[in-house]
Amino acid sequence: RGRIVAYWDCGLSYRRIAARDGRDSVTVSRIWKRSVHDVHIERRARSLRTP
Figure 1 (tube, rainbow, N blue to C red):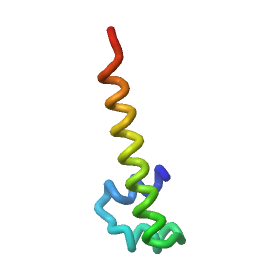
Figure 2: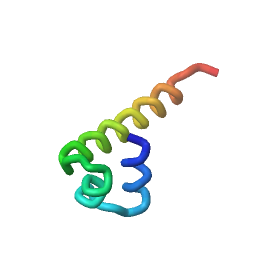
Figure 3: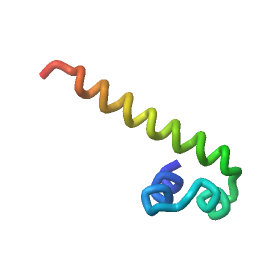
Figure 4: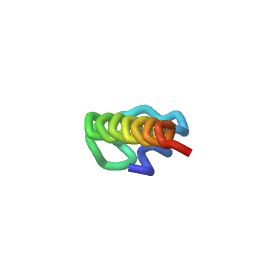
């Protein structure tokens, strides 16, 4: 998962990431979307905490 995000941050497409990682491009897309969603939820939870 971390490697896929790192490849994406370097500017590679889902297809190129899939080819490098030996996965289907749909799987790579799903992993990327889940990762972005998890980060969004984590940031939201942090912003709702009371000091």
